[in-house]
Amino acid sequence: MEEPPLREDEEEEEEEEGEDGDEAGPEGALRKSPFQLTVEDVYDISYVVGRELMALGSDPRVTQLQFKIVRVLEMLETLVNEGNLAVEELRMERDNLRKEVERLRGEGSAPTREVNLGPDKMVVDLTDPNRPRFTLQELRDVLQERNKLKSQLLVVQEELQCYKSGLIPPREGPAGRREKDVLVARANNAGGNKEEKTIIRKLFSFRSGKQT
Amino acid sequence: MAKKTYDLLFKLLLIGDSGVGKTCVLFRFSDDAFNTTFISTIGIDFKIKTVELQGKKIKLQIWDTAGQERFHTITTSYYRGAMGIMLVYDITNGKSFENISKWLRNIDEHANEDVERMLLGNKCDMDDKRVVPKAKGEQIAREHGIRFFETSAKANINIEKAFLTLAEDILRKTPVKEPNSENVDISSGGGVTGWKSKCC
Image 1 (cartoon, rainbow over the protein chains, first blue to last red):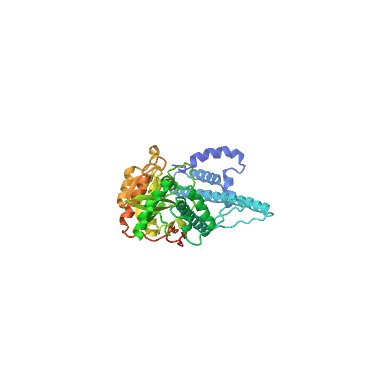
Image 2: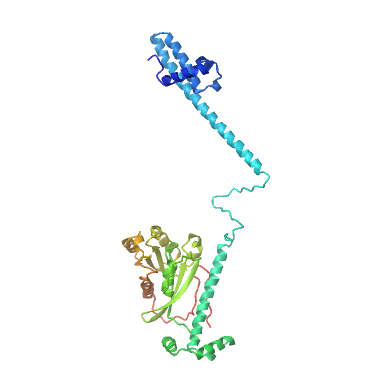
């Protein structure tokens, strides 16, 4: 009961060890500037105060006072601890900022164009041959043209097949047909397949019967 | 002058996540071939295949869309002209199955109201890597009142059946009439500037 209940025990040992090294002794802590106080100093102070309280004997009033003093010392311990941590953090922050300043000074010679991009923006490497460079509309147009040409090719192929099979005599082809096409059709017609002709003819007779 | 080699023209559309095999499904149907190398479709492409159903020659113009989100605005403009839409997922890719509802919403937003829909669970040859049970596909199809097939473009399972069934469903809804006098034309889908190729 005589000793302050909390960390006092452990710290006492440390104090005893440190006593030789620290010339001021535990009392020295009381003379320090409050801004330089460490947790160890607080423990020194509590040691000194505890020792003097014990010397006062076991008067119940002293015991009452002792509890309050212990509480105040605990508060002081917390404040000193927090203060030191904050100082340490600020020191690290300062060191980092110093380094950052030095780095930026070093880069200062080369022009840095750090663009602050929005969340929907993207950086394009202009030296990348595969970089995106066409718009959606351009792609849409190209695709439409591709598909149009593809379908025209299919139509032409079908038409050619008709000529090949002799279904449409070249001379009866619609006016305006280019001579070259007719010649090609004629040439193909010469080697026309009889079997093919009959199948397609059958199909067409079905239609022409309906249309007329 | 009419050299029309078909009676009806049906426009179909393939949609679904990137990499589920839409292009392969189409390639199997149109060319009866399969290619293992994955080449992402750029925007939109199409193939033509003529089939015969109930004595009618039906030209299927099948639009193949890019599944990648970045082509979304291009691909959705092609929904409008479609008479049938095949929504494809990959049975080995759970995410592609989860996204079905997203694709169905796209259909609701961009396609004709009476468009015929069909759900395909592709890559069914890869049963060892399956993560979507067949029953789950059947269930979601039932919930939305659409047909469902598990397909494999690689092993040629149900591909032709799926396309023919979709074409039949559209044919059933098509009013019987004289063959229209339209030329062999390909318009590039509803929302986009339509055009007709001149034949003859």
